[in-house]
Image 1: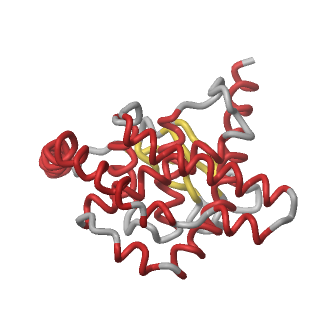
Image 2: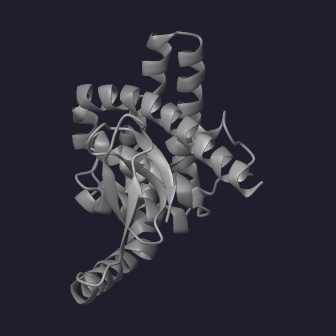
Length: 228
């Protein structure tokens, strides 16, 4: 019984990841073609990164809409793991640590009005994109994943006010704490060996103990869910 539940979660996460990959493929195309919209946004670099992460958090929730809409099997924390890896792989953020930090900040603020507003834009975009892909309408799928939210000055201004009031100090403290923890424990992290789920691949991954999320095999590229 427990085995079935775990397998069910693994299948659900993989299905969400397939949706997320498809959606982000279209998003990245628009993002690369319309860089001027990002550059014209007047937010500072760190504000802009979190602004985009908020939108992408919503995109990941949209990728789940057709899979586990009532959140009976997975959690939003697991969605953060998925979108952090996907955002890094699509070169939206330059490291998984950076992506994870940004999406975690979004997660703890998800019920705030402006965060909810931005993420909802991402959610609806993803839902429309997936619907278009199901209908083999690639043009509408690409159009759905536009980056118009970067050009919304009112949205950006409201976000900036919220960020400076609520998140800027938390971000600074978080970086200090993470640096201290990493410095003191970098040689104490316990590892667990996990075999790749691809039966044709003999790679053994060294993962942190108590890992819970989706990983990617560096040899064959397969993504799969693990809990150690």
